[in-house]
Length: 291
Image (cartoon, rainbow, N blue to C red; front, side, top):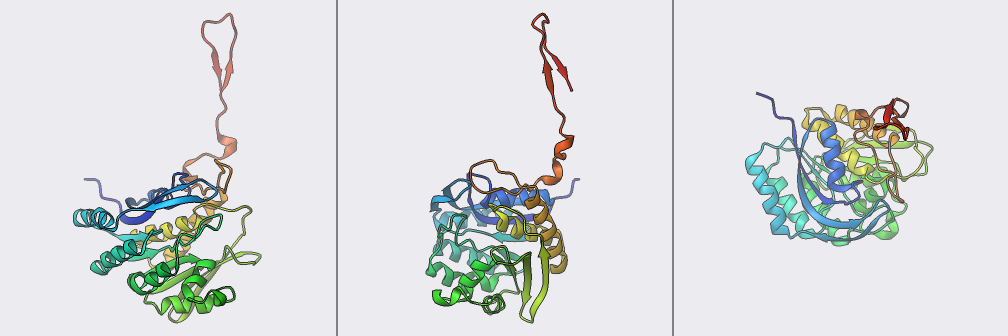
């Protein structure tokens, strides 16, 4: 009998561009050998450049989606992205409290590529009070870390990341990973924190361009590594290595941001892609194919 791959329950919005949201999570987890169980929190109207609008699903419907799966399949990890509403967040928090032994990786989604705000202070507060206490690791960029770290808009801009991380940790999670993609540093510095302070910092080459779904890729890769049994140190290394490769091989299918190639390992290098030439002679019945 074939063994069942590790399973990850994913709460996120649908992104029609395939760059972020559920598609990013599913591709990342599949690439890491996991079986993703997607729970839709919202539907969005967006492209590779940003969000036009979104419509959150009804919280009772969200609860039913997840509960049916949880009663049927053993879950190895939970990954949470965009939740849409406070009511949806409360449902996810209650589910997390009912399954405390499943590690939950939270990727707070408060804004999108063009800066569109997808959350308000009520959602920030609910995340601090209801969901983070049931979270194993919060994975966010520096902008969102500052938003979670203080309710004072004037303090957010200059809040040191060490202080923001400690305030998030005080809400009840075990770890906070802050990605330095938005910081003005020569290299991208990703720092993992615990209640004891900085656990590790990893420096990565700052790649040109901007990426749609980089945060979802990193958070899902962490969830996938943990579902495969990795400890926190191994999960950090494997997830960051994978995300960097996905970003390094990103492509631009539309007019907006680059999209990480979560299946980079499955594609041949460009110079190895076979070229097919059609040699057509009008006197022949069939064209000749020349490799």
